[in-house]
Structures are given as C-alpha cells and as structure tokens.
Image (cartoon, rainbow, N blue to C red; front, side, top):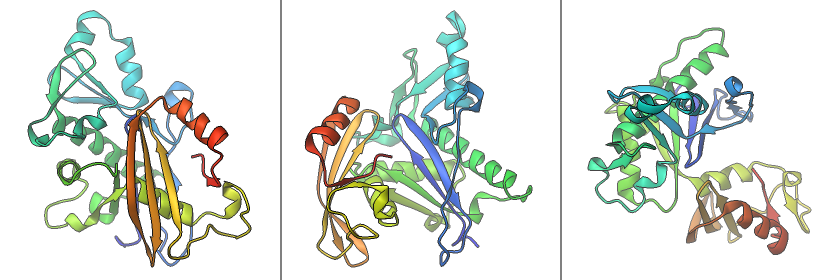
Amino acid sequence: MGDSYIIAIEFGTTFSGYAYSMTPREEEADPYIKYWGEEVGKETPKTPTCILFNEQEEFLKFGYEAKLVYGKMRGEEARKNFFFNCFKMSLYGNLSQCDLTIKAANGRSMKALKVFTEALRYLKEDALKTISDHTSGRRFIASDFTWVLTVPAIWDPSAKQFMRKAATQAGIVTKGKEDKLVIALEPEAASVFCKTLPAEGFIAENQGEDKLDQSPGTQYIVVDCGGTVCLIQVQVVKTNSYVSLHIFMKIVDNHAAMRKFTVKSRPASWLNE
C-alpha cells in the first residue's frame, strides 16, 4: 500500500501546496491537487508560505488564514505574535541551520527548525484530512504514504538534511523509516512531470511528436521562476534519468524576467505552470 500511496509537498518560497496519488504505480492517473483559498474567495493550487504563532511560540495558522488573521491584528497583539512570510531561503548559505533563527514580520525571532517543522506539520495534517474526506472517511496515518518533499537544486547537503529533520519532527516520517521520505530537487521533479505531458501541453516550434524528445543526449533548460529567485538548470537526458550540467541563480523581478524569457527569447518549448 505505501508504495502506491504518495503525497508530494512543494514547500515554496512564496507559495506551498501538495498533491497526492493513491493509484497503483502500473496505472496512469493524474494526481489530486489540493486547492486553497475558499476563506478569502480564491481557488488556487497553492497557499502562501506564511505561518503565524502566538506569543508562546505555539502554532496558530498557515497560509491564507495566517495572512487573514495577522492582517486583522493591531498594536500590542501584532507585536507580541510571530508572523513569518517567505522564510524558506533563510536556509540558503547558512552552514549552521540547527541553531539558525529567523525574524518574524515584527522583528522578533524564533528557531528556524521550529518554524519549518510546524509548517510541514500543518501541510501533513491537512493532506491526511483531505484524503480522508475524499475516501468516505477512511482513516490514514503518515506512515501509510511515501512522501516527496521538493527542495531547490542550489541547496547544499546540510540544508537538505535540515528539511529531513524538520519533516521527521513534524511526524511525516519516523526514525527507522527514513526511506519513506524522498527529497527531490525541484528542476528534476519538473522534468519528470513534463516528460509525461503530451506535446500540445507546450508552446513549441517544430514539435511533431506526441511527447517531448526524451532520447539520450537530449539537453533541456529548466527555468524555475519562483517568488524571489530565478533558477536556470541545464539538463541532459541519460538512460532512465536526468543529469544536471549547470545551475544558475539570480534574484530577479520574476514577472519582468518571465516576460523577457517568453517574448524576447522565444524558447523552442516551454510550460507555463
């Protein structure tokens, strides 16, 4: 069961979300994607990567609800609580993540491990509840699933280990079952997903195949325009895998960068997701 039951979490800089599949691996089926924002009149496949704690450092809200509740706080109430937004990249370049603290919107600080752990715990519990609601109330626990957690390709091993530790403290996996958590690099996950798409899912030139060319030796550029960072990775197709050749990173105005990339550069094939 656990090999077929999969929950994938995208913990993004500005937005986060998850999808799950309970279909046997030999069968092809689209994963279910959670949509967010009903409480604020939206329906989006991701929710803001925001988290709110009270003055005792106890978790209160995540995502749209965290922004909504914190936005209504005034004066002393706002000053004594902890609201974190776009905190993911605080791990980048910090060699001692275990003792790392990050600043909330009001200038107060908390241990980064606590912030990341509670964010992942919320996503885990919401995923299990969503699945239960869509399976006639069946009860599931985290160990029933294989979990996939995406991380930036530019993160060093210590940052990836930090995310694994946060996931363990969040109850996503337990000691002795660490293999139930897969840390996946974001551009490689994107490439694997694009490999399953028909050619008409792309804006392409001279594309006559039903699928994108996946023959060994084919090279791709994967452009990940996130909330604050633009990552460009050159990949080459090997037999049953991808190999990264080069990774470039730049902090940019991503709306402007995307317009330039799609209009001026006119790539041969791209997916706007």
